Image (cartoon, rainbow over all chains, first blue to last red; front, top):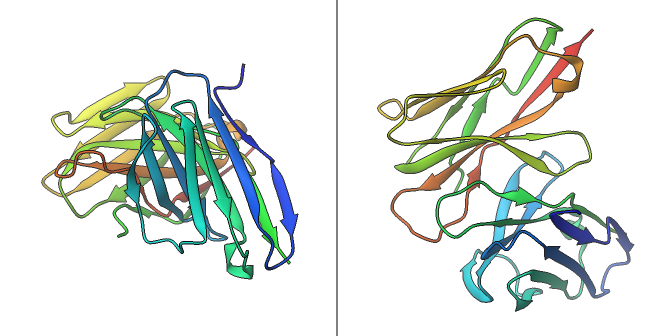
Length: 112
Length: 113
């Protein structure tokens, strides 16, 4: 009955590879987000989708591309992975408007 | 841009003591939220306080908001070892509809038994 689920939980890959992280929410929320948490625990918004429409696209390399096939899913595809992409990536969802977020458990990406 | 800044960065207390964490922010907000993150886990929403509220309670949590000083505090009373975690404040902008929460750097709380 996980509300926001991300897969995989851990991802170790070599530089230059392409990888995807999947996220699904079963809360009926309209808005979904991707955040990146660095080694100092700083959380930075990357993307936000509202009902499949991109509404926030922060300054991230265009190697990162989000895709939302429907409002319950928001996937993150990363091309040509670099060492600096190593971090924990969190998916979250919320109702439209000013509400609290529900976070997934995170995907720890390690690029070697 | 960075919005919330928590203080202190780290806090160590004994079980049963109270823990107070502070958060300062820079721009006008619609609301301020506090989240907890246990080691290796996702963030959990604790409490939301709107800009027209001054204080809110939830169980052992008490949150205050002072919009004139652009600051908030989170008080955890009678702390337990299970409260050991990182705590983040996050702000929702009042001026930009559709913007995402901006998180502070967090306070790491250690509660020893």
